[in-house]
Length: 203
Image (cartoon, rainbow, N blue to C red; front, side, top):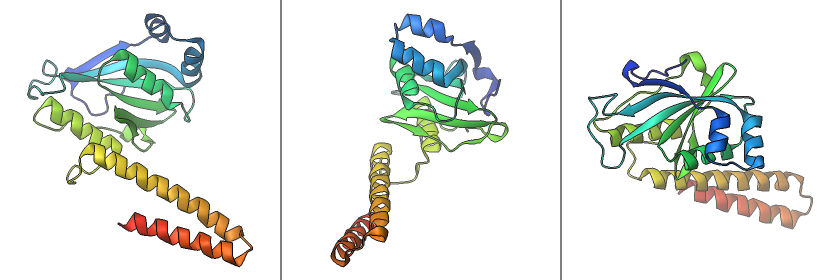
């Protein structure tokens, strides 16, 4: 079972059977089917807390959190499975999602944040910080690809990135329309709109 660079003292390796999860939370048929389509099995591999990592001081907000190893049946899984797990279990969790020989990390913090896919044998997460709050926040920075040194808060960075991605999608659509537009006036209007959106990106 991969430990992703976490200390041996944090090891739990407790299976999280899908059937027991379904029954405990009385999942609807559609929810069960989604889980069965995407997820093969789940294991709680580690718990980060003062008991398992004594060098971490108590946090104001985070008493501890779990790492859950999720074996996927398909790489293009539904985010709803993770969001439902996060909501129903009611604990802070970091997901290590493995499909074949690749792994992606995911964590929920106002949004579901994901890392890039990497070869499982090379993936790891550094446990950094003086407190449990610090450790949790540093994992969010790492998984979400956020800047720990930025003046903006995590939440502000997430919102700004979403807005940027939305602008980029709009620009891509308009550029395709502009390339195929035959009427000079409409083509000019599309071009002006593209310039305007790109100016927003540079602000």
